[in-house]
Every structure is written in C-alpha cells, then in structure tokens.
Image (cartoon, rainbow, N blue to C red):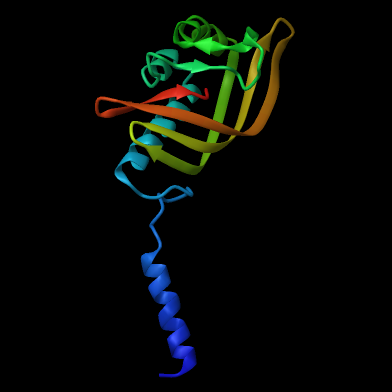
Length: 155
C-alpha cells in the first residue's frame, strides 16, 4: 500500500470513530441530548407563539436564574417567572426567535446547553410598536425530572 492510500485509510477510520451530531448543532447525537434539544425547540416555538403556559410547562419547579449578575434585583424563581412571563409577552407585538445549539453536556440528571440566539420583536409602547433585535450567547441549564428534562435556568 502506498503512503497516500494509508493516509486516506487513516482519515476514514478517524471519521468513522467521531461521534455523530444532532443535525444543525454541535451536540453529540444521544438520547438525552435529543430530548434536551427537543425542549429547546419547544421553548423557541412557545415563545414565538407568546404562549406563557407552554413555556412554563417546560420549566422545573425549582427554576432559579440570577440574571448573570451578583445583584439579587434581577433574580427570578419559578413563582416570579409565573407572575411576569404572561405580562411581558403581552407587551410584545410580534416575535421571531432563532436558537442555535452549540453544545449540550449531560452529567447525571443535570445538563447545560450553550446556545446562540437571535431574536427580532416589536414592543408595544404608548407611541406605537418599537422594533428591537438582540443576539447573544446563552447558557441554559436543565434537570431531569422523572423521564423529562426541564429548564432549570437560562430563560
């Protein structure tokens, strides 16, 4: 065998050993990762429909998010999320949310996903609808409750 043929054979062997990914993501294609990816997709769909009840159905009872800051002023638990979500969504005229999943890491009954989101929306104000756009990296955390993965933080 020539050295070129050996190099091709080695490359093919390495490619065959690499893990497959969930299409369109950087996440390994495993049962748990697919389930978590499904929760992320369901979240994006519920937000686009401005369906607060559908979003809350995806959230763990012990949801807590510190807003990424040391100040407790922006902390939000499940009860707080229930209080503000419908009202906040009611201020949005239209919403388009695109989420890209970079990674999903599972450790026992806990997981985290690194996401890139791009959202376009119009906020209703007394002067009329004001268009907005935000893009950012986000980390969403999950907990497995029974057979289902629920969002623990990161909305």
